[in-house]
Image 1 (cartoon, helix red, strand yellow):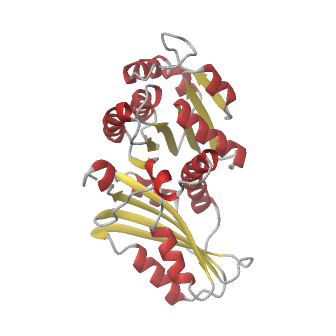
Image 2 (image 1 turned 45 degrees about the horizontal axis):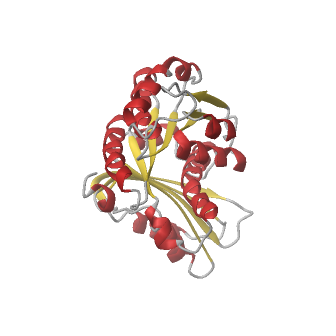
Image 3 (image 1 turned 90 degrees about the vertical axis):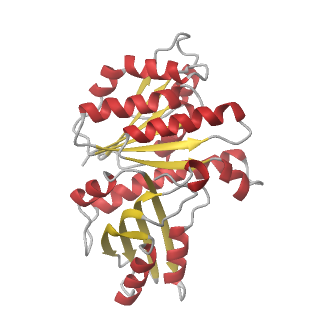
Length: 315
């Protein structure tokens, strides 16, 4: 299995760099940075880096998506050469500027044309509300991005102000970065570690190809209230405004201690899939770990969720 994680523009570069620092399975996950400024690209960490060609080479796209689009098209052959037989490709970009907003949809289209069997997952961050000039650009960019990827993770930076107003800015953005890092690590873990009930590559590809928005969530519970806590922590995420009602499907993977009962596993699965449409497909995997004590850990991929705050009721 091969997973590529590609960061575009400053936001994408920062997220992928933190992932690289934290450490990912380098045998499976390959990282690529695509930037239009020397400073951010040279300061970033990844397996490969490409400086995108803009009119002011090395000095950004000037907040103009059309420049990001053109630069990504020019870099097409360089990017394709770095990717070999991918199963999943994450494209991570901030929306509202030039490089990410313009480049991400173009890159998704290039990759889907050249690697038709790969599942392409977009990850987009939405700008703060005070960045007024960027909001309309961001909304338009997200709509274009959604049309080119199989599914999209949407992260709202405004949630940082609601939930972490007194946190340092570096720590707050680390929380944003962890959404992406947990998504990639969760995918690797579910597909590569031996389980009592396995989720295979075909299951994951089928689910993530359904389209729309995706919620990738991590939760856990311990002690007497482990079932309730595992359910609540999985369904709630302060940075993702998500409505699960009418979701198209889900894969739920539980990592449990040996003492967890079948009734508890069933209760977690039933609660987490309550909003999924009757025609939606649900797959579950279960891994028992002897080193865990009194614990239920959840990794859930839900496809076809809604984000009313950012996209209305559109899937």
